[in-house]
Structure formats: C-alpha cells, structure tokens
Length: 585
Image 1 (cartoon, rainbow, N blue to C red):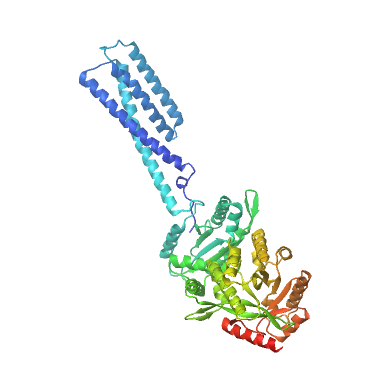
Image 2 (cartoon, rainbow, N blue to C red):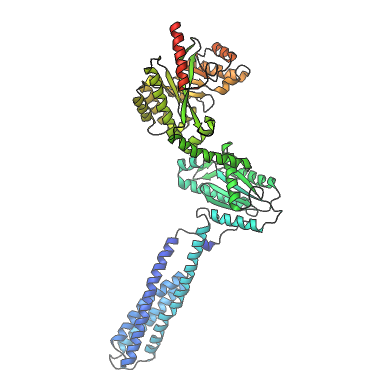
C-alpha cells in the first residue's frame, strides 16, 4: 500500500489566513457591485420614465463607471490575469474620458443623445453585470479549496503532511477488511528515544524540524511498500500489507533503525537519535485496527524498558504486565490513603566492635488481599507515575518519628538511613521537606542519614551540590547507595559533601569467588580510605564475605548475617537484647 503525497492544492501554506481575508474583501466588493447594479437600473428606469435625455444624471454615470473599475481589477488579479487587468483598466479609462468629453461638448439640456452615449450605456451595463459570473465562479473555487483544506487538516498531521491517527486507523481497517485469509500484515509503532532532551536543549522549533526530516526519511524508505503515519508527538506508524511473515516486519524494523542511525544536520548541529519499535502482526496479534495499534504500542514500550534503540515483536504476556502495572498504580493510590505501607528496619553493624551503630528504614507494602508486595515491583511504577514523591515523604516522616520514639524509650541514639529517589530529591522543596520531618519528629539532624543514588548527578549538578550542602550544614549525613553501579565519577566524590559510600549488594554476592568483584570492592575501599570516607557493605550473608571485608578493612556491614529487615516491634525487641548485652558487658 504505497503512500501517496497529498496534492499541492490541499497543502497548507502560511498565507492561508490572507486567503480568508481576501474572501471577506471580495464579499464586500460583491455587495458594492450589487449596489451599482441597483443604481444603474434605477437611472435607466428614471431616464425612460421622465424622458430625460441629458443632464445631471449623465454626470453620475462616470462616477458609477469609476467605482466599477476597482472590483473588475480585483477580480482579474484574483484569477491571475494581471496583464489583462491592466488592459481593461486602460480601455475603461478611455471610454470614460470619451464619455466625459461628449458631455462637455454637448449643449446642456435637450440635445439628442448620439451613438457614443448609447454605446456607453450598453458598455456600462455589461461592465457592471459581466463580472458577476466571475465573482460566483471564484467564490465557488475558493469554497472548494477551503473544503479541501479542512478535509486535509482533519485527516493529516499539519507539521509533516503524513496521515494522522484517525486516517491511519481507517486505512488499516480498510486493509483488514480487504485482506484474504492467508494475508499477513504488520503494524510498526516507532518512538524516537530521548526526543524530549532535544526539545529541552534546542527548543520546539528545532524539534519540529527534526520530526519533519524523520518523516521524510520514513516516507522515502516506504514509498512503495508501506503507509507511513504520524499519530502525534515523536511517534510514527508504518503499515506493511501482504508481507510473507514476521521476518519481513523485522527486516523493515532494521531498515528503520539504519535510517535513523544517520545523523540529522539541523541549524549547523549534527545529531543522532535512536528509536524504539514495536511490531504487531495481523491476524496473529489482532484482527482489528485498535487491537493491532495497541499491541504494537505495548511492544514498543517493552523495547523502551529493555534499553531502547531496537525492535520488539509483540507477545501476549506483555499485555498481562501492562494490565498489572495499571492495576498496581491504582492500588498504590489506595495504599497511601488506607495506610497499607509499613517500614521495616535492618541493623547496620560495626564488625570490629560488633556494635550496632545504625539502621536502614525499608518500605514494605502489605496488600490486604495479595499480602506483601516486594519493592522491586511497585517502586518503579511509583517513580514512573510520580507517586514516589508522597510515598518518599511518608517514609521520611515515619522513619524520623520512629527513631525519636526509640530514643525517648531510653535506647542508645542511632542513625537511621532513608533511601531518597532521584525524583524526590529533585523536587524544589525537598530540603524543606527534610527540615519539616525533623521538626515534626523532634529528631536531631545528625541522627538522620539520606541515601542517594549516583544518578542524581546526571542533571542540574549545581543545584544538587547546593541542596547537599544545605543538608550537611543542618547536620544530616549523606551516603551514596549502590556505589559503582551507576554513573560513577570521581569528580562528584570531590564536589559532593558525602560522608559514606555503600557497596552494592551485587558486588558482595560473589566477592569470594569472582576475582572481578573482589577487585572492584578493593578499589572502592582504597579510594574511600584516600578520601576519608566511611564505607558500608550491604547484602552480607556468609562468614566468608565477612572475613573478606575484615581483610580489606571495611568497618560496617548490613545483611542477613546479622539480621533481616524486621518491623518496628521486632526491631524494638532487638534493641532490647542489644541493650541488655551491653549492660552485661
């Protein structure tokens, strides 16, 4: 199904607004013309009724004739006959001058009209009545062009000229209805990766030019083999009809990736932008347009999650995941309202003194029907939907209150560590939220430690540094969680007011059997010691791991070897045992 370019007459141009203005002017001239006809008819009627041959009414004729010149000139120019308009102007002026001369030399009152006067009467009637037909024809032409433009706007994307979503769906449904039982079709859903970064950096006009060039590349690539559409934003559809099988759709996806792999040269900048592609096949993945486009969309977002810059064929289990995510989003909203979240606490221990010197607050979700839902399932959804902000604030307030309650119960003061999402950290009033949580709970700032990830250093570095300095000036401790797994940089270790590094659990898991993991942990320890930073290793579960950490002089650990994360009540019992053993010692 080849894509056909829209005819030039239906394309939109910058002067379409001027065309509407010209139409208004033409209507005004048309009314003037009608007024001239009425006046001319009245003059002729009066002349015939009273038998007036010459006189004041003859003087009015040149005025009427002069007024008629402007509409005639406008009519001829509007149909592109400029040279003819000039010729007609000179002829009319000549006739007008001749008639004026005839009046001047004719004795005033009672002289018979000659042939020139009669000819002028006839010519004036033709001049006034003749262009009426031209007005009607031009108005019909413009009305048809306006209808074509409206039709085009209703079914095409105005930026790129490609069919829009509704037009594509109609074409797809039509192709499905005409398809034979053995026919196979494919819908490819294309989304440009990180396009928002382009518009944020260079502006929307720059992004529009990139979209136009992207659409031209797709149109050229599938001129004879597919229909290209732009449903909106930075997304495109491609319809391939009568393919041999899935391999043809994958070859088309590979062609699209190659097309976008070429740099875009816009306004002196050379940029490369990748894309993610989802593929749905007819009839395997859907038997109507809605199902096919929805499933192609689902496959495309699956590709986004897998790292972008590639293609993915739809599979039925993808929908199950999407449905679960949608349901879980609604559950998350209710969980906040119905207090279904709770905090568990895991001790942080100094392995040289064997004393607990802190704890980490970890969120848990106890669903009334499904039981405990692991954070790995709901935290990504909370971050994607923005619910991580109110959830994170709840965790911060609850952790501070609980730590203060333990202190007021007489237990030795301990630091409590709270994980902070990058989305939460980049909120404008984040520092004030921390201050309010401390004031509300009465917890002293140096008993609070905020665990941030390396990814916060990717954007707005100056703002990040300023916030961290404000927190450190309050007395709050700052640690880098899962160090070494993100965008590690020695530069931010120097600039950021960090007090502790936390070795990721994935390095500890095989540290005693994998030389690479062991080398990474040793390198982190050496760097931390050189920068006078504390280090804590999480995920410590075995005696062999503990011995390795002792050998590399890592003082603090957190893991199942000491205790799993437990609810506040069980952690209170743990504190009681620790206090009792301390008194006995």
